[in-house]
Image (tube, rainbow, N blue to C red; front, side, top):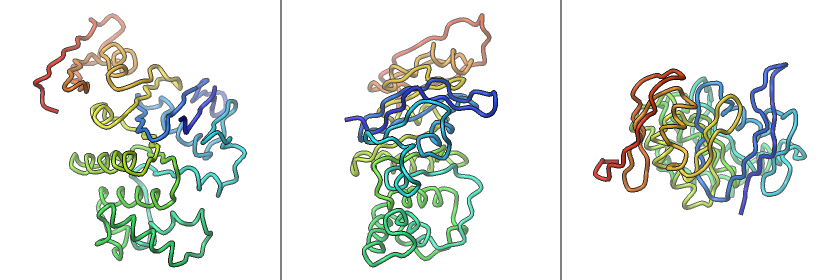
Length: 273
C-alpha cells in the first residue's frame, strides 16, 4: 500500500525552478534514499512533503490525504522531520528534547503516558543513559540519534531525514543508518532520507530516487538505479559499479566530460560489503 504520493509537483523561487513536475509513489514501510548532486532539489522535495514549502502546482498525499489541506499540527501527527545535522541549538535535556515529539498529540502539556512513551523510545534506541544530559553537550552522532528518537516519539507513519549522516564519522554514519533501517523493519515506518553517500544508500535502502536539476532521473531498487551510466549522466563521474550479494557498490574513478569513455560495470561476488 502506498503511503506517500507526489503528483506533478513543481516548486521554484522567483523564476528559478527547483522542482519540475516531480511524481513518485512511496510504498508503506519502505526505506527510500534520495540521491543526486548539490542543487538537485532533494531537500526541497522533503520540505514540500512536510509542508514547510508550498509547491506552485501539483499534489502531495500522505495516506491518501492531501498534505496541503492539513493544519500544521495534523501534518506533525502524520509526518516527522529530522533536519540536517548542523546548526542545531536545543538548550534542553535529552529527555525534554525527545518530549517535543509528543506535542502534536497533546499540545504543550504532557502527562505520564507521554513520559512513558519517551522513556520507551530512549530505551529502544539505547539513549536512556543520556536522558538527563544537556542536548548541546553531546557529540554530533549522539545528537542525530536523539533527533531521530524525537521523530519516533511523534508516532507518525512517515519520517523525513535530511542528510542525517552529514558531518559524522563512518561509525556514527553506520549507527544512524542501522537505526533508521530498524525503524522501518520493526515499526512499519516509511523513511525518506536525503543522503550523499551512494554506498550507504545502496546498502540500506529498499528504493532509491536519483535526482538532477529538479527532476527524478531514475527510481527503483539500488541495482537498477546505481548504474555507471546513471552516475555519469547525473554526477559527471566515471565509476566502476561492483556487486556483492546483489548489492551494488560504487567506486568513483574520475570526473568526465560529455565525450568521456563509457564506464564499466563489474560483478565481483567475492568483494566484501
